[in-house]
Length: 224
Image (cartoon, rainbow, N blue to C red; front, side, top):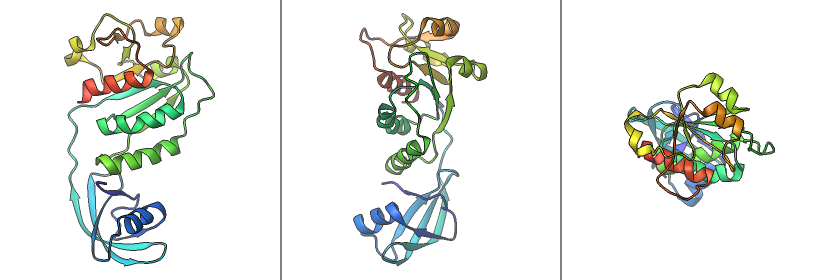
């Protein structure tokens, strides 16, 4: 664990409770006087606190030092991801978070099952744990769109990953920051018509990638 998330990080004192308390003081057996590093995932700072007291269900820490240590990223990548099974999204999210994906636009496409509902609170909890482990200092952003058409009304500069002889490696220096990935079954005919003027690329493989595999692949090619 690189740090502990607490939305009140930066205050003179923090009261540590619930899961964080169990992990820090029961599992890691942190003692009075030891240092703990916190982030709020909103600013650029990492906060060093010292443990003042440990009680049965909570602990109190005092702010000792503040350090600004986040540098601006050279690359930015946004994923427009047509909605798939949310269980798969939850399993894939930590990988995308570690890579540094800035935003995920969840888009309901024609082949998305409408009973899949995005639980943003659950996704936030997954992100918190992922950030604590990998050291990422900011929250990934989420937005939801009811259709590809609705998404295109707000965003026009994006690429599309689909079956195409155009290989992404040939265009790597001129790529947009946002890429759209289809769900199971890909894009419908009407959606392909909507997307025909976008930059459409494929990967150097004859195999059909799952939606989550395509998302990880495009993110890694641009960010890593």
